Structure formats: structure tokens, C-alpha cells
Image (cartoon, rainbow, N blue to C red):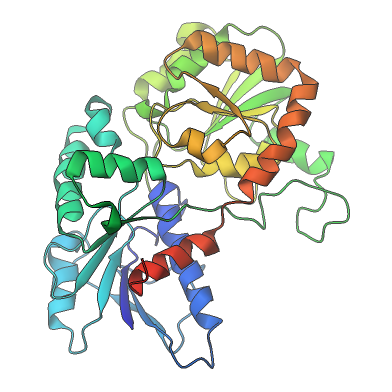
Length: 390
């Protein structure tokens, strides 16, 4: 089978969210395919990019190649359709691991739709982004031959809002980097077999963190509910910091409507206790998670929430919202709160940071819950769609 994949969103530094999903699916599809060497039935993959692939992409080989297209700015409207229609040997399908399929195509189109937050919280998006999400996502949902989404909740939301038949939607749960995000145990043969206090303190010092802290990870934008989180945190006295990991600007996916969020610590008089540390690399993030008293994601809406898996895999207790897909991700391994209740967020934080036995009790189910999710399993579910097995 000849498969083309839109790799534009995967081909960026500082990957988060959809970019992380696109890259990991591409990387694991190549791994699955390379393991089939010697088997008669192998796929031929072509990854479509506006620029040369970054150095962490799989290397080219027979059956795996990259194709640079122009123009990069009119990607789904011109570049992708032009490449499809002009190809002498057309693929059997094209996969867009984003919300947007090519506007025109002579072959089958498969698309990933992560969530419909733009329908539920339109006021939390920039006008241009909202217009694009509403119109282009609707086109993709209505015209794709098959839809891949990342949670059962998102699948049901797509069915409810767009009337798509359930057999046309497949859930492929995201995974996490199992090499880096893991609970340190002595004797484990891993780059992180033993996180020393020296290593942890070095990373903390780099980001201006001292003493005990709780941590949030995610893009800085209104839907993440950070203002209520800071209002709850402001009520908690003592030597405790709130570390907020996430981008506002920079390479890759940027935050939006974050000005009020960044001004909130000063308004609440806690500017010396809140650290906005920006994007943190995968090499350093496990240290910050392992050293935190608790990870918290009080988001108003999530298609999935990969940082929740990363935190549980590091043995860190998690507090998440009781809405959208988050209960599905956490299972019984974390505390759930009403994201609109500052009181509940405050009480959950207080409970976890003051109850050492509870923190230990949450560790084991968190580790077990994280093990249920894998990028390889995700890629195999995507591959089943390509092969028409769903």
C-alpha cells in the first residue's frame, strides 16, 4: 500500500499537542514498518513536508521517503492537492495527522481530529484561529473517508455535533516517551535509572525553583484555566511554589490570549511564588515532574492530555478536571475537581501536599494507568485504519 502523510506539523522544534502526536505517529509507523523487513506485504510511505525533515525524523530508506512541497503557506489548498493530482503513481490514501485534509484529492483522505474545544469555548480563541478551526475542521470531518481521534469522549462529541457515523471514527489513544518519563527505581537499566538530588537540584536551579512545588504543563492559553489555578494557589500559605511549564511564543505552536494569565500573579500578590518557565525539553521535564509534590491540569476542555500520562509515569500524583476526556485518561489514579470551583482546586492541592500517605497511595495506580498508553499501540490503531481493518 502506498501511503502519503502530511508531516508539516510534526516537522517543528518544541513539539506539543498535535505536533507531538503527528511526530510520534510518524516515527512509530516507520518503526513498525521497518520491523517487517523480509515480509512480503510492506507499505511504501512518503512524508510530505514544506522543509527538509528535522534530524530526529526516521532516516530515508526503501519504502520510506520524504517529499518537499511548495508553497508552504498554502499547504492544504494548493501544495497538497497539486502534489496528489500531479503524481504519476498516486498513493492509496493520504493521512493528515492534524485537523485539516487537502481541499481536493483524487485519493482517500484520513484525518485526525483531536477535540472540538473551539465549538464549546469560542471566546477563548483568536478570531482568525477560530474561523479556521470551525470552517476547516468542519470540511475535514464531513469530507474525510475516515476520522481518527484521541479519546472516546472526543469521538462522541464529533458524532453529536457533526452527525458522523460511529464506524467512521477510530479512537487511537496517544502515548508518552517511555524512555524518559518513568519512575526511578534502583537497578533499572535506563538513562534515568536513578535521579540524584544533584541532578534534580541542577534543573530546579536553572529554572529558578526552590523548595517544594506543584507543577502545570501545557500551552499558555485561556482554556487551560490557569487564572483559577493561581487564585486557588494564592490561598495556600507556606513554602510552596507553582511552576507553570508552557509556551507563550517561540518555535512551533505558540500560546494565545495569555496576557491576563501572565499578569495574574502580581494582581494576587504571589509573583514571588509563581514561576513561568516556558518550554522545557524532554530531557529536563522528567526531573521537574519527579521532584514535584503534585501535577495539576485544571483545564476546561481537553482532547486527551499527554502531560497527565508523563506525570503518572514519573510517580507524581495528579489532579485533573472532571470534564471532557480527563477522567478517561486518569481513571481511578488521580483526584478529579470541578474546574470552575476555586474552592475544589484549592482543597485538592491542600489535601495532596499535606497528606504524604495519599501521595504514596496514588503513586502505584498512576504508574499502572500510564502503562495502558503507548505510541506504538496508537500507531498500530492508525495503521489498522489505513489497511481497512476497522
